[in-house]
Amino acid sequence: MKAVIAIIGMITVFVLMLTVGIIINSLMVYKFYNWLALPIFNGLPSITYMQAIGLSLLLSLFRNIPSMDEYYYKGNKIEKKTTWWTAVLFPIVVFGIGYIIHLIIM
Image (cartoon, rainbow, N blue to C red):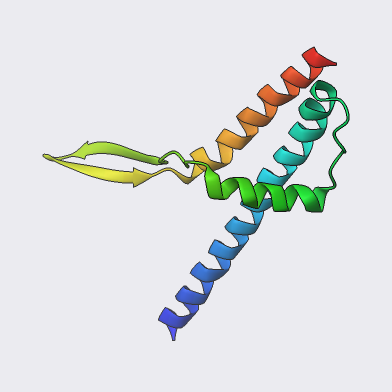
């Protein structure tokens, strides 16, 4: 019974993390498109948030996701440690850089 609850918990956490990732990436696409693409390329229509979600999912098919793994020595062998916080921190830093570029363009 404990194993079933643990599996359900892992699936719930996975779905929640996936949903948060999609929301963050879609917000970045929405903001960057409206901040940067519209002023640079005249005549482009603005997009809605739902269109940004679709565009974000489409773009995720074509990008190469960098490895979020760290390697470290433990004793005399190399161990791999996945850093999930890098996946959260990276979009925030990119968002900040994009906002600075937006302020410079406007």
